[in-house]
Length: 190
Image 1 (tube, rainbow, N blue to C red):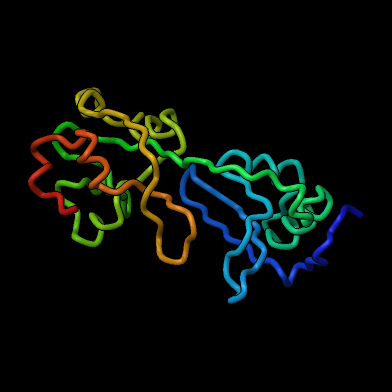
Image 2: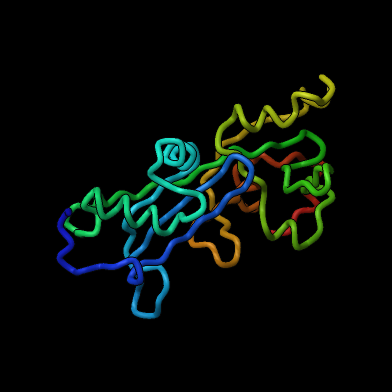
């Protein structure tokens, strides 16, 4: 068994997971003093999540247990073995020349910033894991529609309530970068 100088058990850890379209993460933390997210122990993002599942390191029926077991076997329960890295999370945002940024979709209907509700505007724009995944969403659209689309990579800066990492891009950040078309610009609320 690998080093575990703090005698960290599974009850001393907390797991955070999030899955949406082609974005995903599984993150194991040491609990802080209040039982919340403390020091990061191990994490998997996007394709790494699926690869870890395929390789048998993560088990979808027990993400917490399997993530803890992986951390234990890899020696990550010893803080001295953890690699400290500050990742910048980015996502690809689709912007239509007239409709604005793709905010979300409901029941097969795409919601754009030019027609989004105040709540949708606050949640920011949908972010795809890579440009190819973003483009795949529009393979079945007519050519004229596709020609009106631009794909931009942004740092993620909006986290859903209860999540510790951002998964969307604020419309204010998109607007600041000049990626919002003038037709939709007047409807945006920072």
